[in-house]
Amino acid sequence: MGLRPLALALAVFLSTLAACSGPGAHEAPTTRPLRFVSYNIRHGEGMDRRLDLARTAEVLRALDADCIALQEVDENTERTGRVDQAALLGEALGMEHAFGAFMDYQGGRYGLAILSRLPIRGAEAIELPEGNEPRVALQVELELPDHTTLHVVDVHFDWVRDDGFRFAQAETLAAHLASLSRYVVLGDFNDQPGSRTIELFERLAREADKPEDNRFTIPADDPDREIDFVFAAPADRWAVDHVEVVDEAVASDHRPVLADLRLR
Image (cartoon, rainbow, N blue to C red; front, side, top):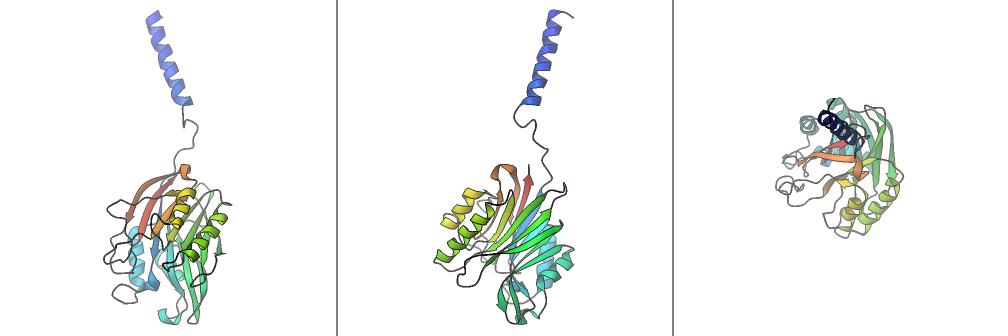
């Protein structure tokens, strides 16, 4: 081999070696995206004041999510016909379900629910400081397709203008999240960008940023506030493929938030 062909072969070899040893060369392949949805369903009561859990199920079915965090869910209360809403929605969608109760209400319980296509390997209600109503966060442990686990935490913080109770709840949850290796926390934060509650979670995790022209989530028929969010941690382990506030103006007083997240 002459000098010029030898030099060319050596250059190709060194280029290949550099590509194999460069940044990210030893990172695991990126997994398929997981679709998360957060939706405050107002116990199935729409903007038309009609209670219709079947309509709620149809909205959720169309979103084709892997994991759905629901807020304002009833279990066996008088106002919603003494049915287990989490179980009924899970059955309708072919998903596993978990429920976390805030409090007893009208002969049943009221709180949060998570629905999942992925196996739920554990669930617990994390007690938060009491505000105008009792509050918990609902945490589930999901088994991913590679048999590792992911924690998903559903929240619904205090709702009044004074953020004292709300921020206390956020700080308590943040302390708990520090014990988790990776998680997605989503729900109705009842606070807006620039608040100390949202800034706390922005420091902890990566926000699934909504499009600037499509970020308001309430009221559903003419939204003018952004109070429903999705965060994923560790921030450098997640890629955000797609986020949208779903154009659903009737089924609840909130619009659903959908986020496709990819775990690196």
